[in-house]
Amino acid sequence: MKIVIFTIQQYNIGIALSERGNHMIKNKEYYLERIGHTDQIVYARRSVLSEGKADGLRIINIDNGGALTCTILEGRCLDISKLSYKGINLSFLGKPGLQHSTQTSVSPGEFTRYFHGGMLYTCGLRNVGPNDTDESGKYPYHGRLGMTPAKEVSSVVNWNEKNIIIKGKVELSALFGYNLVLHRQIEIPLFGNEIIITDKVENQGFSDESIMLLYHVNFGWPMLSNQTKLEINSKKVEPRDSIAQSGIKTWNTFENPINNYQEQVFYHDPICEEDQFAHVYVINKQLGLQVDVSYDKKALPQLIEWKSMASGDYALGVEPSTSKVSGRLSEKDNNRVVKLKVGEEKTFTLKLKITSI
Image (cartoon, rainbow, N blue to C red; front, side):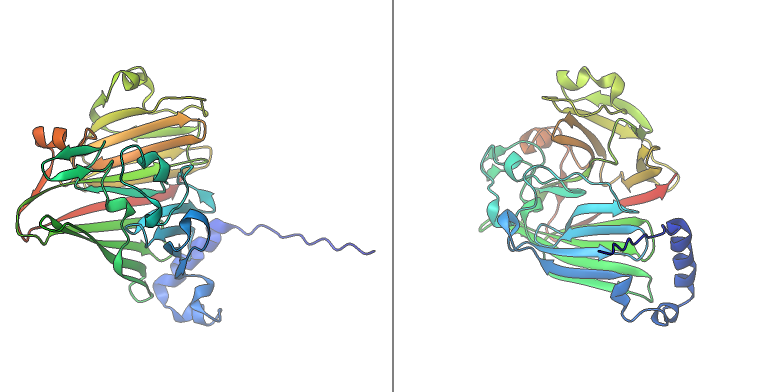
């Protein structure tokens, strides 16, 4: 019997991506001369998952033609599940995995059974933090936004504008109550290295509303390891509780997974850079990657760090927010909620930029 062995020579990816970028600036025709269909190198492909708890979940798989690929969850608020750069995973996916929104429950204690994490899990708009109750009703852990499907979704590859644009809106409302709409746009430059999320929250009701919004940006292995460093130019670092106090000296470094590790949460007050944005840098020199999480601090004045070194729940959360994570009633008492008048809108911007170092 004759055995044939195929070998593949590794191409210099850095040079290939650089060439793509240079040619992209010239024109689209360069590519059309070399490929049969543009999906060969760039796509925003909508599909539906078809098994297990994720059955029926609508997703959008993105390849920007360079080094960035991601999955956007159309059926979950247009959040971002998996994010990879140069084939390296950056995101954390929790043990519950992806689930259709019909598989979730807002009952107390259920959050840990459906929180999948992902690169971005958006919390709000009526609560951030633990379950709460007031005269208006019950507020589930981290709110209902992250489990709500988007509507009027579009995904467009713009060769002339050199980007991929995902748009949609998420509605949160109640009979005789609030009527809030989140309009989301996600921009991913073709052949680029960043994701720009612009959210506009609109009060379409007929009474003023107090809103809360938190961007749960979650890093996982291998981007997160004992080689990872967190850089934040903070005015101060405040532990949430005694558990976090015990790790206050090591908030910016990370261990290998530890059995039965108790999560630590820290509050930061970063100093804005010249662009008037706050920047948080997650750096792994062993992988040669850095992720810059930047955001408009005026709109998102709080920054929470979630450090979970637990085996099987190994994650780092970088979480720009309108509030701390003590729940709706406490945050209202401390005047850390955003007040939207009837017909008012407020815009929030979050950026993720990945670079080789």
